[in-house]
Amino acid sequence: MASENPLRSARLPSPQQVTELLEGPFGRAGYDVDDVVVEAAARPPRIVVIADGDGGLTLDALGELSRLASELLDQIDDTPDEATYVLEVTSRGVDRPLTTERHFRRAHGRKVEVTLSDGSQVVGRLGEPGDGVLRLVVANRGAKPKIRELSIDDVANAVVQVEFSPPNPLELELAGVSVEEVEE
Image (cartoon, rainbow, N blue to C red):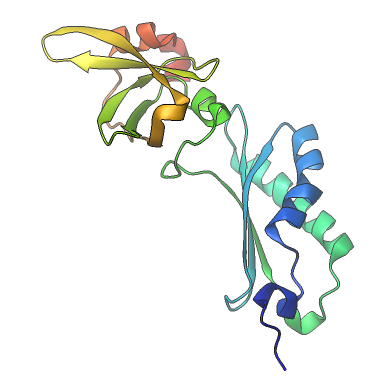
């Protein structure tokens, strides 16, 4: 009789178990485990580890984190050979919502679209967040950009916007980002 819990039937670790296993080693390497998704019903089953770091993630870093995660998961792996799974270690990606102060800090200087809990939306360049407050540099048509402070608690959703044009130098300055940082 099949188990009602697909994770138990595939004998895969839970997202919490994977997070607990990887947090320390990833942290020592300078990265965070942002999220873990275990897809036991997929064929083959998948464990997706979403990582993040202050300087972003290079392909080399993702490769190293993937090897590290694989070695650690192999140590607790008690699944038979026919019940293997695919391990994917990936970055947050630009489309994942910003949900913690750490996410906002790492997006410093980027253009973001913020939906507030009252349903209103604000688009602006993210200044340095701190103490539960976001500082957005909001462009005003024909006027100088201004800084708008928002409580992180009032944010219902926030995502980074992809920019195809160079950022406005005045917006960058107000956000506390040097032009040299953007050009790197």
